Image 1 (spheres, one colour):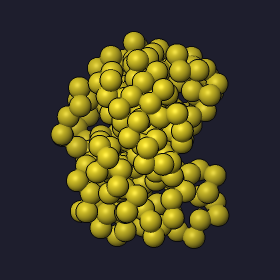
Image 2 (image 1 turned 180 degrees about the vertical axis):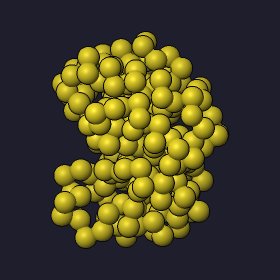
Image 3 (image 1 turned 45 degrees about the horizontal axis):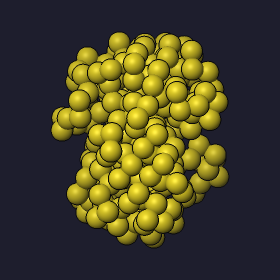
Length: 227
């Protein structure tokens, strides 16, 4: 299921209705999206069972559970991976022990861990990422939260050079997330990001298939390919 043919598009289903999330996931998958993310709002609203629904409905897709775990790493990662998650996000702000235990819990069911750098100080991002990778993390995500973007001095796309430097220093695939559209997603792919997470540009579109197709084209991901 996991592959090394990058980049891939991760559709962030930051919704509160499982039915609507599954509808959008179906349309995006038909257009060629490779990864599907059960966003934090979706899991909070519907429970971890929504991860199982996504995996059952789309068994050939990589399903990401965006939990941003800060504590109880083993228990929550093991439970979520047992419900079908292929990738689980863990906050880089959490302790080394939590990261290690989350990795252990995820791997018990064959899942992987993505370290989320949301709210990590810019000056500490690279060190946090390297530490997580040393502990066994499979992916690292540079993430600007949607709540922060209106007040941020520079956007995620505006940090292209920083991300390029980080990508060259990190030995695992790097993901990016943060209100990306087709043009900014293309910039991130050009910078070397392997996983491009996009939410509202797709989920808020009047034509999900068209938006997904445009994004896949923009980032240079072959359309219609299984993850």
